[in-house]
Image (cartoon, rainbow, N blue to C red; front, side):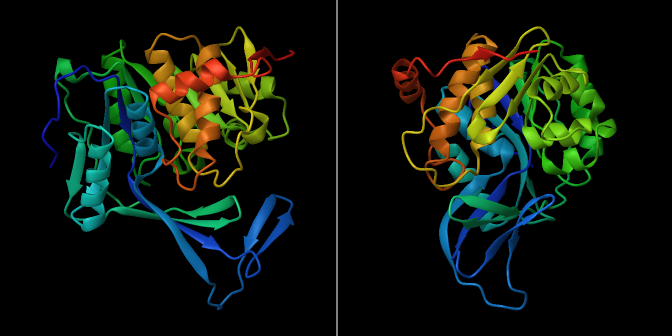
Length: 342
């Protein structure tokens, strides 16, 4: 079942992807260890022990697409979310939280057969490891009236067995070429490889991922040059690609120009990196809805991303439109997009 439609205004963006309740658990660094391995760093917990932790915060309606929906709404977009929740208190809380942010929940399915997703974010200082679980919520793409067709569709993490759902979305996008499509592939979509979601890459007007994800998707290495990673992502078919790179900033290309934006000058300590990529993605789309070119969209996205990491949780630091404009106006001259060398 779905909620009643909450408005008649033209929808700027429909976000598609799982909702999760994100519980943030802060671990004492003395009780765990972070170890260097060939594949990166590993969080090690003593097996069989009882590890003390603090419940730092809870995001009632988290997950990639819900984060993007909230970010877009705060930036002034008319946003709807297509997702699933259970018939349980966490599901009701998630819907209430989304409504408070101004997100249209008409396309949220209430599933009586499975509970609402729950994720656990294990924090040590400002770094985190996320334990992710996707329930098998049944999903079918709805028939939208012409008035409900959005300017943009944003797709990210969906359930483990979402092949048919993704195929329905892909077919719908082919029927509505006027809809711009942004794709932020989630963990499970990346793990399945390119072939199962190749039509989505080809149809995408914009693909957003981080540097390690770009390497995994294209079969390269994270140490490859940004230009090489951008070109390999563009070869999958999207019109625009943006690759985020943490404190190093982000890279973007339309196939003709390769550019980089630095991280926004840090005006506060980093508290938690969760949701930085979602804030970046949402701001890119919001800027493009407003008609801004990729260069300007990337600078605004970097600003929102930096503000998010200064608070714990994926949504607490998300900017509103007025706050964004003030920070854009006050940005130092050193904060600017530059061209990447070939």
